[in-house]
Every structure is written in structure tokens, then in C-alpha cells.
Length: 396
Image (cartoon, rainbow, N blue to C red; front, side):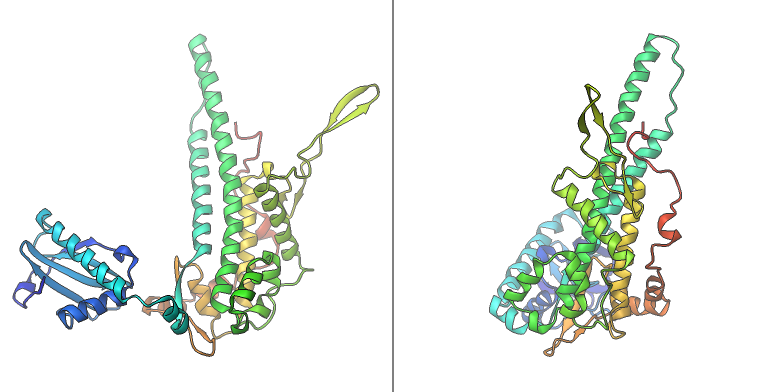
């Protein structure tokens, strides 16, 4: 591979071949490899999303290695929209050579430990929130499909057989919908755990940033982590909430539902008592209770329960962000939803959340203010839900 000339680079069309940081190699390591091998980049884009590019010649055309939105890619340059097939082997060889050389430049574990100045976290909150939303969207799709199918009149035996089959299909769909609602409920709860763990990963005080304390804190119940977040983490002006608040009590309730589900407990109401009564044996059923608008029994979870669980999670997140000090509050209100969260930490443990031009524009447009204006009370907006509740026994 050789640097392309100015004349060769007049062919400015093309597109990516291997994109999204192949091999998971850091973009800066790739830049160092290319700088050491070819010297400075022969094409510089004065844009936020892409800042450098090396255009290289091969026997079958031009290849480019460039950064884009924080990642790096290998692409094709030329007059055609798609890369010629004969150019793909060269692109693969270039990609593999870059990855191999970049691996050799990676710092050792000790260097990472001694020189760490921040990180980029794959956000567990965003992961599980997306999972919960996808599950509920699938449940809604099945319900819409089911409701659009109107049973026909039964005029003969064939119609009867078809009606029986349709009923069986509706029962199966109802079971799938109920399972999706339960799964979405749990995923929303796990998104809260992910948010709390994200906060601790970024803002944990220096005195606790060692294996002994980190293991102790990691094993703490999520309720304790929430209540003591300002004690364990920097950049908080005060506690997130107190144990006597209704929001905390509602959180305790969804925690119990989550535990009963995850540990397959025989929850209250799931057992019918067999009683010797007036010389006979009868089963006594218990009414299905709700607390804070959410069923006690995990087997009774509905789409409304899942929606209210999500609202409790959102209110707790807003409370946590509101408890942060102004230095990081708005920035974290914005980036806590990102799939990847980048942070910097100086030698004194002070955290910075670097933002790009788009993020600053979003803050100027009031993105953080809109989130922080969300009510954290269990008010009418919490309880009121538009639409139909699909509970066990009503789906068929």
C-alpha cells in the first residue's frame, strides 16, 4: 500500500467497506499505526464527524482509512458507488494489518491502571431500557394483529373446526403477550439497576475506588445504593430520596415483584388454601392485590403494570439526576441515555463529561430541562393510562 497522489484522489466517490471500528480497536491506535507507517494523512476533513483520512493505492483501486463519529473504517474511493469485488481482498488485508499492528501498540494492564484518565462505558441502562421497549412493542404488535381478526359465523363442521383452531391460536397469543409483559417489566427494573451502576462506575469517590470497597458496594442492594448514592459518589448535592417517601415505597414494591419473579417464589396469592370446612374440603382463593397500581403476583402482571414500573424507574432516575450538582447535572441528564457514555477523570477524581457540537445544541434547546421537569410524584399522570389493560383471562 502507498499513499495516493493528489491526481489519484480526484476520484472522491465511494463508501465504507468495513465500518464501526473493526476488531474493536481504538481509533487513536489506528491513527498512530497509520502515522508511523505513512506519515501524516493525505486527506483531512475539517468536520466534527470525520477529522482525518489516509487514501492508499492498490493494484485494483483506491482504499481509504478514516475516522467517523469516533470510530474508524476502511472504505473504497472511486467513481463507482459500490467497491469493485476485486478490491475486497486488499481491503481485508489492510484491515487485518492495521488491527495486528494496533494490538502491538495497546498499553499493558499496568499502564492502563496507572494512566487511566477516563473511559467509554457500554451503557447498561440504555441496553435494558431498549430491551424492555422492544418487548412491549412486540406485545402490542401481537395484540393489534389479534384484534384485527374477527371470528366468522359457524355454519357447518368445517367452520366449527376453524373456530376451534382460531380460539387455540388466540390462547397461545395471549400467553405470549403475558410473557412479553412480564419480561418487559423485569427489563425495566434491570434498566434502573443499570442506571445506578452507571452512576457508580463514573462518579464513585476516590476513597472507594479500590477492589475491597468496590466489591462491597457491588454486593449492596440497589435500594442501599440509591439511598446512599450521595455518600459513595462525587458530584451530588444531597440524597436522592428517603425511605419514608411514597416513591421509595413504590420502588420497594416493584423490587419485591422482581424478586418473586426472578427467584420463582410462591408469592402472596399464588397458593389457594385447602380447608376442611363443614365436612368437606374446599379451596379458598385470595384476591389479586395491587400496590401503587401494580399487581403483587408476578403471574398477574399486565401491560399497565409494566407501564407503571417504567414510570417509577423514570421518576427515580430523574430524582437521582436532580440530586447532582450543577457542574454535571445537565450533561449527565443528556448522556445517561446514550448507548456509549464517555467520561474523563483528572488526578483529583473530578469527572468531566465531554460533549460534541450536537450535544451542546441539544442542551441549548432544553433537552436536559425537559427531563428534569418530569414529575417525581405518584400523581394522576402516574396512575392514568390510555388504552386497554390486557390482564390474564381477558386476552382471548
